Image 1 (cartoon, rainbow, N blue to C red):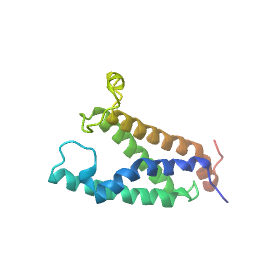
Image 2 (cartoon, rainbow, N blue to C red):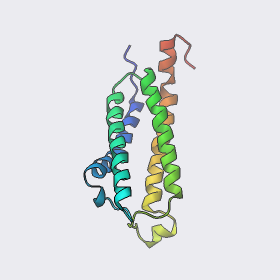
Image 3 (cartoon, one colour):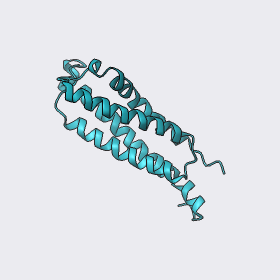
Length: 147
């Protein structure tokens, strides 16, 4: 049974959003455009980046797996929770990226933090769409009727 869905591209979307920070955070955290990096935050950024880098590897490996596998489904739920929490944190964060998209967009609260938060929210929501769009694969394998 080749239970594959084009919705699995959401795992690649996760990688596309996270890998730039993961790579730069591991190898050159001081070049990240963040305010007030000190030794403690540099170590935390490196540790976080290592974790994100590893999860990107897991997402890449899970991308091609069948949709009904419990591990792939568990990763999707974990990524949904992660991206939802990241979105909330970034929306509520004080300005820490000293870049602007211009005064007009700033007036509408379009800041790098809010854009990044929106992208996390969209990936989290996409994980929900993947889950709902592939639940019938898991039901078929369990022997239950698709709903």
